[in-house]
Image (tube, rainbow, N blue to C red):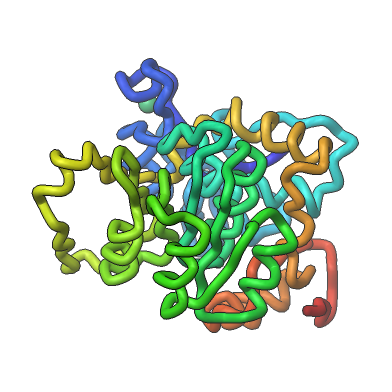
Length: 291
Ligand SMILES: [Zn+2]
């Protein structure tokens, strides 16, 4: 099974219209730490134990709602399967659901963390060309080039690259940083009829400023992608099929495999921007991992 942090009630208008990521019942349950079906199921000596985002990921055992679990083939290694439930779902969904990218369209992705890199490989798998990856860190750009980007550059080098590889600008620009400044840059390199997709989470006080006339005059789209507008029960098996076909090289995103005891160090690595995906194996002991 793959556990996903997007449970769904299956009965609200969002679930019934194929948008379970927007399920309001699940959002409320995730917010309070309840299961989507209501309440909690675990107690310890201190009282109730909450179900973090419905999956309680950092534990040896968990009780989950059935909508938080997607059944997959047994031949997928667990360390690989774990990668499909979070950032992959968001980046893949941003490309395939929010944007609905079609073969031959061009794409640029800003921010090469887990979500951004998932968007890069998903855009490549969906047939985009060129696929440009933008990030200040050279090692992240190198990784993007290995998993499907056709070009990569630092933010300050983008304008020169656009005039070279996408003179009409991009059909799709994906912002996976959570920065208004970066979103404005993404909007600026989106072309006529194109769409600018935000999958990042900016500060709640942030306000976006866009050249308003261009939205109508260039038939532009500005789209928010909450959890990739994902449909986990459909998307996880689809991503695994693409992985089996060699078209979603998710294993390359793993920067370390660690035990539960290494959790705090893993969080520090993630916050520093050095780690991309770290797989926590609860049964593993001692300090592990390698870059
Ligand atoms: Zn629902």
